[in-house]
Length: 275
Length: 305
Image 1 (cartoon, each protein chain N blue to C red):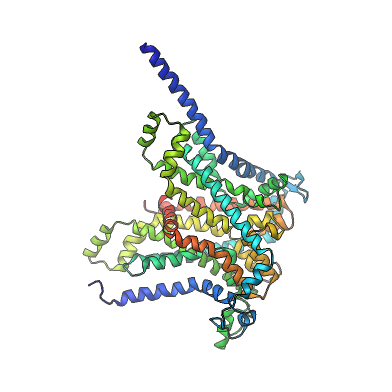
Image 2 (image 1 turned 45 degrees about the horizontal axis):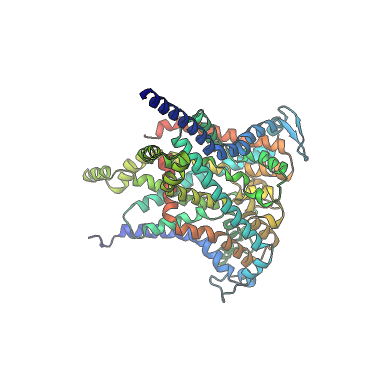
């Protein structure tokens, strides 16, 4: 009965397929063009598939700009941001969820208020702080303000709150101190939370645009987002090169997305239910 | 003996409590100090800057409300707020509609559901700058594939991104392309949270799938719709990356696509008017707050909890 052909379902698939076409087209166009010669990329009428798959655009882009360096900067800055946020947010999230100390709620509300303010509000003073630290146009400038996250703290607190309290009580009776309870008992139990937070942070840090654009100017200290803008300006009509850069910029996130798509999608889905 | 034990117990209890306080502060210290230094203090500072003239060497000079007064007579401020509002007013309802339709279709019993879901979600994880490069080329007047298709059917060659009438719509399209899948996931999760019993009861009463959608799904989904609406408005108000990548300063359509955050960026970091830019950022904040507050007060009329 389930296998019965249905016009309605065919229609649903047709509509979904059409939408998918628009969704996927830019990715396909990006990848296909990156394997063309620049002559072929601009020919009219355009060819869909490259006449011959060539990788010139990739070798060109790696030798132009300091692309390898920029790629490395992006990885470095992303990894540092993710690791720091995981550690700091898990620590704070645990304390806000489970430890009693004076002014806890006041401090928590103060930190949460950061979430309600649009990011531009902080940019000018942040820039001036980095300048005062003598770090303008440097690698640390890329990630310093991003190491601390109100969103991550809130997220981790939610995960810690969902754990049963008896676990800790048992550990306290056994003579564990707070640091042992956190490190040995609680932290391993919030692994799903840590995965969700690393996914969100990874995506955010890898795709970051405005902040690195503001603080860093020399190409050797740049990350991918703003570097693409430079690439676009320098090689205006070298489309295969531009597309090769774009492909390399999006591949890591897409890879991580496919690996962790369940956690990715569930993390986003829950934001609506909890909100 | 008994009292000594009690005393010891009390003493141990007390020190455990104090130790716990210390542990609490140790745990929250990195985030709290970091957020204070890089977010909460800057928030206050930014407010102060908006009443100052901050020159190229970052020396501040108090000028009272001058920045705000200047804003009121700045055509660029009005134009960019107009552009941004236009962007919000178009992309939020259209985006909501599209994501609702896709979510509803995916909520049906169909094959390949998870593949569709994954692929629709893809744009929202990819780098805006990278994707903007592709779209910019697609819409390019001379070399874009869109005009190649149009002209091959005998149509006119259109300067999509250089015409001040069409450019903002291209930006909207890219914005929609990036966000529809994300909102769809949230709406779909909301739909899946609606109990099947409602639908079963309605089916017994003879309600068709469209009636069920409008009488059950939509009303029960209003809290999720509200959430998606609020977050979309807030993020649409701050659109930057795509505009920065797709419309350069030299583009004749620059003025008609300049958003408020773009204007803020230019004033602060291109022209170096940090005090004025700070005032613009306060205005952006105020407008977003105002819209959100209005949304929250109107929600009682249409959101069912």
